[in-house]
Length: 277
Ligand SMILES: [Ca+2]
Ligand SMILES: [Ca+2]
Image 1 (cartoon, rainbow, N blue to C red):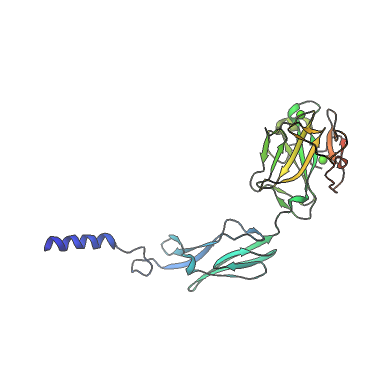
Image 2 (image 1 turned 90 degrees about the vertical axis):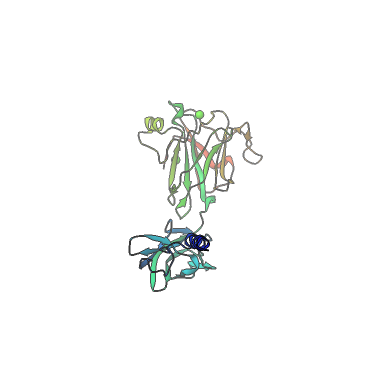
């Protein structure tokens, strides 16, 4: 009988260890506050706000709170609202996100911006046949919209399918500004005496028929240019041009001459390179 009791108590001891981590137990350190954890302060309309909350203890430890123990509020329901107990960005503007648990609260200011209007980004210049260094090539993009646009996840590619460049996280293009994507930034520097906005893309452009295009994060094409008829694997479609235009001789760029985009060769001319402006 003694042996049996000892075994039962051992099992008790295994199943119910000293309950220092259980809320309400005697050894639980006192709570000093809560803190909202969010990865960024800027969100896009329609997206969830991945906010969580941690409990702060007097001994310096922290523990993520159970989601149903937190009460969330937003200072402006036109900016953030709740689906169940999960915050979501619902409209443009600034607001304060509040979390509360018992007598503890925390607040974080957030801003909500419109979804990027990728259709307002145009390929504005392609320097595909440089005067001296072949890899001084560049592609220039123009944000024709009134808003900054986050290019993270967008990509530039060429029609042969050999080269592409995905924009790094947090790559922004300011409203009405242009950015330069060099093939090789050191060769670009040699020719233009300044460093471009972005790192070397490695995108190598053919000199007699090339297609250059920009895709948004879901992979669909935002803008495309067919140079000298386009790449043999991706030639110009009917309606682009009646001849193999635009083209540019060695040392010149194909350059967009207006912000109106007709998706034809008429939007471009051959000009002296103007990277970034
Ligand atoms: Ca080339
Ligand atoms: Ca330019």
